[in-house]
Amino acid sequence: MASPVPESIFLEDFGQTVDLTRRIREVLLNYPEGTTVLKELIQNADDAGATTVSLCLDRRSHGCDSLLSNSLSQWQGPALLAYNNAVFTEDDFVSISKIGGSSKHGQAWKTGRFGVGFNSVYHLTDLPSFVSDKYVVLFDPQGVYLPRVSAANPGKRIEFTSSSALSFYNDQFFPYCAFGCDMQSPFSGTLFRFPLRNADQAARSKLSRQAYSPEDISSMFAQLFEEGVLMLLFLKSVLCIEMYVWDAGDPEPKKIHSCSVSSVTDDTVWHRQALLRLSKCLNTSTEVDAFPLDFVSETVSGVETERQTERFYVVQTMASTSSRIGSFATTASKEYDIHLLPWASIAACISDNSLNVICNILYLCLLLLP
Image: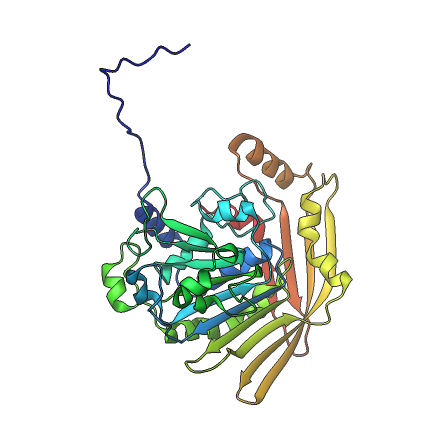
């Protein structure tokens, strides 16, 4: 039994801590700017089981009269909105609040990691936030914008359905009223808002000195659209990626690009989720799966829509646990707590006049990243 501490001995709180802003800067060094941010958001949505992802360049500027604090007024301008139709679980809320402590650590089939890759959004903003189910969450790693934040708790979570948040702080929460979210009833999806860091904010930021303009996001959308089919090709759940622009004065956003899996059947879903299915069972023999996959890409300009279709043939395999690479993955898990899967996919475009071949040995490689 521990002895009581004499009153004459003063025990001062003292221990190792992490400088959050410095840690985020280190994360940004490992995650390139550009479409990497968008791809991380799509991958996280896929891991959550979402079937639709919508990205929106919100060019509007919102009111500043009813905010949580006056210092938030500078983040009421243009933003990137990212919607998906999956709802956060309580584990997701815990995971996204930690850098490098994701709940996906022991789930090798999950490629995205809320704890690390999500933080690439700090390339764009100092104040990421999102709405899902009955909560709105705002992060302020520098502790300078939100009220009553600290290094120990650099953010806020608000249960808006029971607090009449929209009526008290209408200007603060109105920007989230999009893609079916009304900020009054629980939201059956997830909507992120990343207000873009301008030049003045970048000059003061402890996270990144890089400013982003709406034109930068437009360029990212154009590049992502070029890669959209390839992004969808090896995902498990997401069937459609859409891109929108919301101009000032418009009542709703306008779709400019979309990439989607076409003619979706139960068989299509079964094949695409082979990784999830096989990762949960003990494979005593090598499993091979093959199937065709059709895609449609659309660009909307005014009343004109340009449409392109492509067909791919996908072959994917999971090595047996007794194989050399399977044994390596088992050893890595048991001895080093590194969770890998001996999984590989390859796809060939079999559309007319196409000789493109896309190879993807994705899961073994990506899970070695920090």
